[in-house]
Image (cartoon, rainbow, N blue to C red; front, side, top):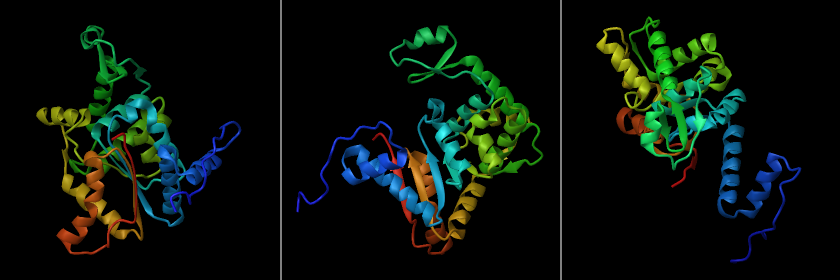
Length: 271
């Protein structure tokens, strides 16, 4: 019984495509390679089952350069909507605006970076001017909005469309490509980022908009309600994960519509 699963064999990765690599590790079922292969198979089932797929994003994935993977999934129709921290979406705009974000070193002294005008995210270094130029873009864009009370999805779609029109490299931005492919992007904590701080600043100047989180709660619950099957790829955990998870109790506990729960989950975390 204990030795009934397939044997594990070492296998080189020369001249092997991704599908064969996934199949190999799926058959071995060992350690993180096996778990990752299982996740790929679940994702394949989601797509084949025509599930509505949400990607939740927590942690500094986007400034680390992993946004390109999300963009590829959107391009192929494998993501239906996104729930992300606001910080990831803020830093996403640097890439569209062709503003520098650099590999760094976690061992560098914070005081030295401060003297050089560099902001750090662990081992990612961002020139302070990158932040200031992104802030300027956000403020100028918001002042073009006609609507005054909006959901975060509406805000992000608007910013994405401005990036498509004006940014140097919109193809490198999740927000821009989400606007292009009509993928709604929500944030569960809109005040907890530099996007939120810029909105607050504009409100002080009486030139701002109002983010209505109730719209987000209702819209995401509506997406789940209208879908035959639902699934999520949860990158990290935190607030974005919970915001997706709460769509079911919003329907069953609050509204009184029993959807019988979500159908598929994949969570990838360093915990």
